[in-house]
Image 1 (cartoon, rainbow, N blue to C red):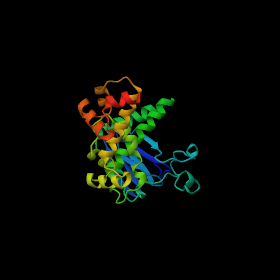
Image 2: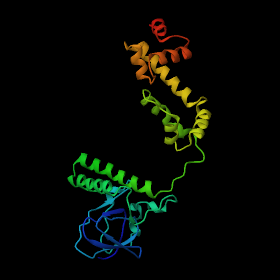
Image 3: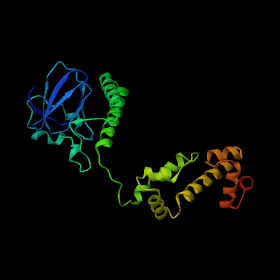
Image 4: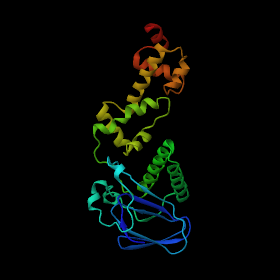
Amino acid sequence: MLERRLLDYLLVYIQEGKCVFNVEGKDYFLSEGDFCLVQPNELVTLKGTTKTITPFAHMDFFYNQNRELSFPTKAGQTNLSEFQHLMQPKLNEFPEVTIPVHFQPEQPIQFRDTFLKMIGHWQTCDTLGLIEAQNLGSELIYSIMKKYGNYTPPSHIGPEDFNWITSYFSFHLSENITIKDMAKRARLSPSRFSTLFREHFGKSPYQYLLQLRIEHAEELLLNSPLKLHQIAEYCGFADAQHFSKSFKKMTSKTPGSYRKHFQ
């Protein structure tokens, strides 16, 4: 097969048989069960050494407003200078990522099934199928980058890096939220997370979460007929006694007297 360069990504699964991918002058001998990823602007040729079945997908990983003008290149197309505006960025040009052409997924069977499912949805050409195919494609590239990326936690964290905290707390008020879980989400150690959290919000994560829980309890006390044990559960307290004790400590009123006073 004649060589060509790509505008996009070519992801291939060797379902049956054996073949040779030559990418940028290097041969990769692939057989049943192997995966191959050819990145944009790489020179590639493919030769089947036996009868093969090789499901494949041309994929874009980055948004391009001219995407509708892009296309899978054909054999012999090696000079893509006039199509640079359609060229996808290359993952291996990012300093923290090095993905080999012949790569090994963390979970090969799951990766294979997701890949084939993505192709199946794409071939349906219906709206929901195309959206599902896009979601599955994102899942595939995420798993590849997670394995072959060398990511380090940021040494500095700015105010915007805590923007998720309030909504995260609000959606999980009834759950047992730990410092360890939040620190992991922020990609920091628990002690470092607590220090930066206090600098940003002026109080500890526990105090901030407790304040949100009490504020939500106040709203439920005034605007719902819920009993105290139900409010305690919705607001993440262990039981009604724990709720009452915490509520009084912060508001100087018991939940019952608060409800009676303001209603």
